[in-house]
Length: 202
Image (cartoon, rainbow, N blue to C red; front, side):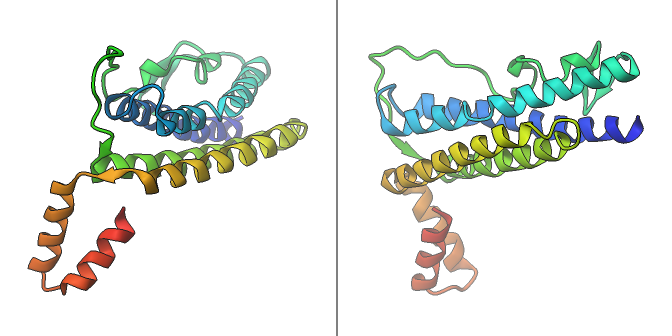
């Protein structure tokens, strides 16, 4: 029982991180780009790719409750009345930034700063971590889940490549580029090396 519960807790920690990072990424895309922009479409697609992971984890949590009974308490800092609530569609529980509604006529910058770029990379890594955790959880009696999770992984990786292609076309805030170059040069790096590092970061 404890081993099963520990596995659920681990998956939930990845799920909570994914929900937090996913909302942050969609918020950034909403603020910086109009609805019709290809980057918005790419981010939205990627953010919707792991619904199958959530469903598979939800099935495992319900099976745990049927087998061992219910309980209530805090898991990873979040309170649940029963294990069946751990993977419900309640993303606002995990958000760490507000939700924005922007009118259609509002102009967007269509540029990003380095922190926003980093968030997009975190979106990819947190998604892969969730897929790996759910795949491990769904082993055993849920071996039929492997086919669905393999397909989820293929779609997710395809959309990750789509995000990367879009990021290469997006302008980075020029003020931040200059600030990074100045910081690197202050520690004694030549301009050419500083420029190479900046290109790698972006």
